[in-house]
Length: 286
Ligand code: NAP
Image 1 (cartoon, rainbow, N blue to C red):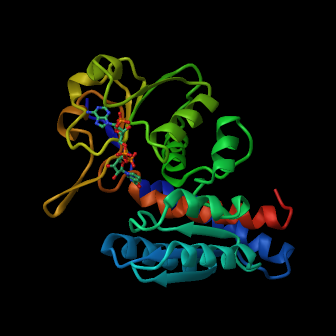
Image 2: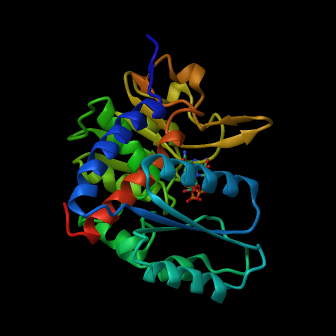
Image 3: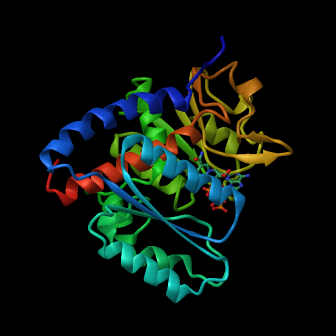
C-alpha cells in the first residue's frame, strides 16, 4: 500500500472559491466595502520579504485593500508600536499582521499585544489565545487551521481518534492540539523531552509533526493507515524538507502531506480567510 498525498494547493483552491463567492455577497451587503489587510515588515530578511509579497499578491487577487508598512531593520520598538497604532485606528484595515521574526531590539510580545485583538488575523494576541483555549470564537492561527482544513478535505472524522502532536510551540503545536481536542479527539503532545517518541507516535490515528528536524518520523513509528501531517520545513541545500521520512512512511500511512506542497501553500489562504472573518465581524455579519 502507498499513502495518498494531500496537496495544500488543491485544498486551498476549494477554500479560495468559497472566499470569492462570499466576497461578492458581502460587497453588496456592505455597500462596496472590501476587506483590508495591513502588514508590518521590519528589515530586509529575504524569506520575510517573500512571504509579505506573497500575502500582498493573494490579497490583490481577491480584491482586498492591502497596505504594507516596511521599515528598516534598526527601527525602534516605539516606532513599530506607532505603526501598529495607526493600523489599529484605520477603518479600512480589518486585519493586521506583523511579519515574524522581528529584529532583536524589538520585543515580539509587546508588538503582538499592541495589535487590536479584533484585527489580530494571525491569532497570536493573548485574548485570541485565551478564546481558543476556552473554546470561544477566536482567530485561529493560520498553520494549525491549515492542518484542520486538510483533515476536513479528506473527510476525516476526529471524534474518538487518537491524535499525536509532535512539537509544542505556541504558534503550531499547542494550537493544533487545542483544535484537535475541540473536535473530540484524544490528544497526546510530544516534545524534546518525550522519552520514547516512536512508541507514542505508533498510538496515533493521526500524527502531526511540527519540529523542524528532517527525517525525524520514520515508517516504523507510524501505525498502519494513520494520517500523517508534516508541518516541518527545513532548508537543506537548495531543497525544502519536512520532518517526515516520506519513503518509509508512505508505505504504512493512508494519507501524508508532502513538503513542499502540503501544509505550506495553505497558510496565505488561511490568512485571507481570517481577514474575511475580521471584516464580517466589523460589519456585524456572521
Ligand atoms: P519551534 O518553536 O522550534 O518548536 C519545535 C518543537 O519541536 C518544540 O516544542 C520542541 O520541543 C520540539 N522538538 C524538538 N526536537 C524534538 C524531538 N527530537 N522530538 C520531539 N519534539 C522535538 O518550531 P515551530 O515554530 O513550532 O515550527 C516547527 C516546524 O514547523 C519548523 O520546521 C517550521 O519551519 C515549520 N513551520 C511551518 C509552517 C508552514 O506554513 N508549513 C509554519 C510554521 C512553522 P521543546 O518544546 O521541548 O523544545
